[in-house]
Image (tube, rainbow, N blue to C red):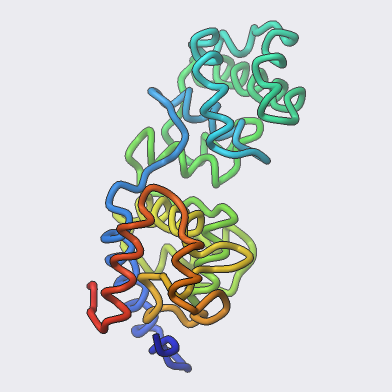
Length: 255
């Protein structure tokens, strides 16, 4: 694989075109990308996202079945027995602080929103422990309102792709939102996060097995040897992703 075909300086129009082509290629790689937290309603998703701080989605998903059987409404969380709640949350780490968060969240929902999770960003971010990242996850996945979720994966990848140079999540959200169509905001968030977890790792990206190699100005910062890079690709999608990357290496344009 030759180095990225992206040239500098890149015009604004060129950047927009590259970003939108990237979204199309990611759609081929991750057609089933989704929020990896398990939930059945907006309250469950909101609580799960709050609990996901400083732990993995897998760990949260191990805890939430018992949690949501015991606490079904905002009032249930607001009036929870702290000792019992802390014991359920213990595996997620920082369980005392998280118990405070979900109890406070439940109380705020009861007091200000009739026990229902609001469907507006400006309301969600007034809730204790809820910032724009959490609010956008809830809006996108529970209410179908397009939103960009800037977590560590999303920020890292969009900077590597040259979509932004910002570190502040709000500024990243604003810049990326200007590059891709609004209808794609939720899915590009999920697909970027999937790609960050499976291919474009923080320490050693699998550059030599990446379907986005021709579109990425950071190609080469990771492992470029195809055989070694393939071993770095994670997840159930690995065979599919590697097959697409091989097609790219052979000169095929995926989108």
